[in-house]
Image (cartoon, rainbow over all chains, first blue to last red):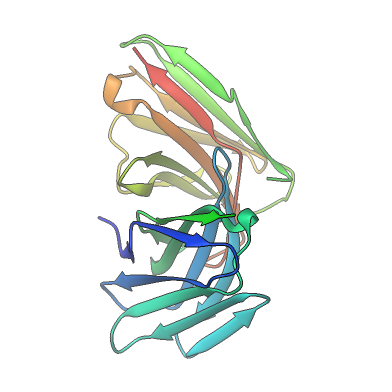
Length: 110
Length: 111
């Protein structure tokens, strides 16, 4: 079964707006990661946040982690057309193995 | 996708035929994984390998087998393909329980 669940399933925003998506998970984790998948391509790692971290930034990405609520959020600021993709959270509750959610599909309109 | 290739990239096969998908890496990563991606399910782990000849099952391993005779190659075999195995298959590599690196995927259609 999937460990992570993203919300919303789909998101449509105007270029320049911010996009926020959430991930909830069920069991304790060591790390939580976010990946991006462009249409027809493999997943690409975006950012990793450790269980003892609350917030992390990478360029226009901001990730938060609340282990008490077992949830994480990914914020993409000042979105661009190139940000159109599906975004997945992944947790490593299982040794050496990641468990992925079903993903959030983000469409950035010009 | 650099460093990880999958072959074939597309395949159409008939029910009941055996199919082998190949993943090749040049990263010398210890861990290799096979996932399938279906609408509404995200990525689900089929099998993974933590070293040459060391493999283990994932959450959807029924109907699949794997082999890893060299660090760089990880093969996924469908012994007798079924329509429920129509999917996009991704190979990934990693150095441990951290980020994974994905190949470009193989689109398999079982008719």
